[in-house]
Image (cartoon, rainbow, N blue to C red; front, side, top):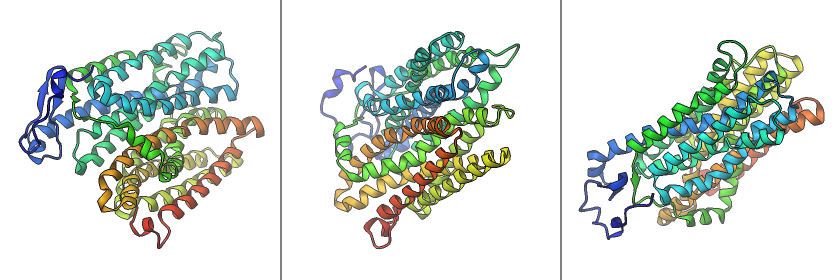
Length: 452
């Protein structure tokens, strides 16, 4: 899977090369998207072809990552005897594994090649799918075995990191934001699609057939792997310097931004995987047919948050997002007290919308923070550190997919309801407003005046 040995020879300067060089194994040498002549020639077409397949493969990764979120609420009807705490463990485990895999998946791209790793990461999705197909038909399976198989869905969470890293190499700086935003949105919406499709598929015909939730993915995963093999490319010059992670890890802003990203993306993925179980436990008469709406709203709001951040600044949009999230969380508490389903679903849709917008605004903040911090003379180092920060923040933020469901489980076990978790979440958002304002928006500070 490594680049052909012939490509280690010195390159011709980019001033002399206007077209990329195609090598065996779909490796491309002399790739330079910043070269306008190359980009306007074959470059743009190559980049967009790779982006198209990447979005499809990442979309499937998110589908698999979120698959247990919509299967778990239906396990009791299939004969599984589970407590509420165990059900929240099953929806939280894939997020924990997915967060853990994000940095190694990012580093895999330059080692194996973007096209090669996309094929491998797509085929790895067959493992959690096969495990689910086997276990959901066996209600006597131990909870430990069930949890281990659910955790395997974390492979899908790692796909996001490698896909984003790979696509970033294909596009020039002026189009990188658009390409990465499209790639991310395509992945996020997979959560909504799977929560819409599975309830329809598993009840087709007589009885409940949860194994169909896994079966529908087998041919699509094989198709994604084949499309990646046939239509994607590896870039010889792609380099994910591990030093950028070290540089980012030493910078306090990486950890401040990671904390903020737990509040935005962590809330999005956490609420997304927990929402079907919440609906089933709080309003069992409603069913799961509308469980997908939250993830859909959050996915669509992400690019809008990024666009708004470009206009008025990422820190301002992030603060506004947290304020709206506080309102949504408090409204959900009152909805539960009044046993009002319309208010409950409305409050969570507000939460999802704000988390999605906050995802986009935080990604806009990251390069701005490090460029302002380093000044015009340190732009190269700043971009390197920002890239490492994106990788670390993405991994840390994904932990919210584990923390939110476990928070609901703790609240239910300790108090008999989820209200305590919602109040805790509200307090966390208030803290993040203070952190974001003091660090990046306070008047008179370097970042506040620079419209981070």
